[in-house]
Length: 481
Image (cartoon, rainbow, N blue to C red):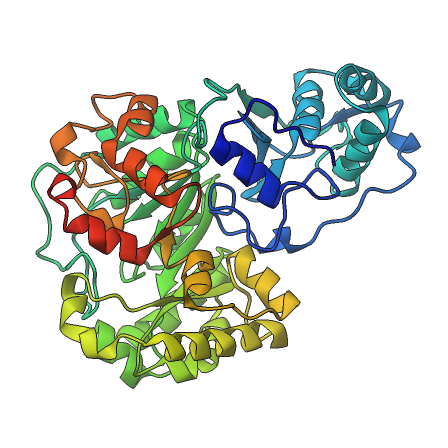
């Protein structure tokens, strides 16, 4: 693939050079830049190369064979499959072909003719072949009503995405549990004044959708803790967003699961498992939590709702990471991920359980052994690629720099607290409040472009991920309090 970097800012050129210079229209280097690698996407680890024969698609109208959103970005664009909740980062040639296909009844030959005006003919043909081979384009099916919503770029000179791919929404700090390691110190009594109502959240979800946001992650606390929680979930779905719910699952029963199943845009439910047995899990989360988790995950799986479960690793459970993954997979989870205990929130009382460098490496090695053996499937493509390549991390800096759950994405994510105020990430809780960046009163683009914390973190990262250590250092700065 030929990619031009002429006229790009330094960060843009760096991202293009390190991630996009490879054969094919998809950007799939081993360790994608955080601007691109920011959602569950294990299927991105491999893709089909372009076939030599594309004649079958030349003289028939072609279209994107699923409901989609197409966003223009400085590197080309993002094609988001609304039906399967997948996003594909594509180069300029692929973006141009997809944009034209979305606008009307264009045959493959017409798409080639259009793209040939500004691109090398052989590259255009190869790109069209890859799009057909990977089922991102196909013969138009007159019996299937699909649509592609297009979002043109507002400013291609930005050193970050045009808008967040994912917005994390803290519905409430209230939670059915008071877990020992909770960074937010959530509990049944942890509600704060000014939590937005379901209609207010509905208006914000509309703003997000209009700005091209693809996914909303509902979190907390427990986003299902409130009496109107399911109204809020349905409001996110009604706005046309892909919905990811991060919950302890205590609020779920057969009736509420059916309500979730009726959502058009439900991506999956995320939950947590902290031990391969009740004793270890319940020590962190409370008596009976393990048995409830088994029951709730089973109900969700039986209803056909995908479940992603994450384990927070510490000195008492990290050697059993493969057993934990196998256990939650037996319960019915589709994906299993890991994170590491941080001494924040209630976790400050568990400093003695924080893993050292060697234990982190050892637990990662065990986890990847399970990936390679098929014990479980990660929700993040990063781990799939690492597991397939059997490539260890060079050192701890490299490890921290590459792990999706130790770092944050100021280039592609934003977080809202229960009042609708923005901040950069969980480790910088409350940092934007003084700036008045509340999505009820401001356009998303204004917050995305002008948040001082986002700007400083982007500069600090220099186009790369932000280490957890960087967040801890920033919390000690007055301007980030």
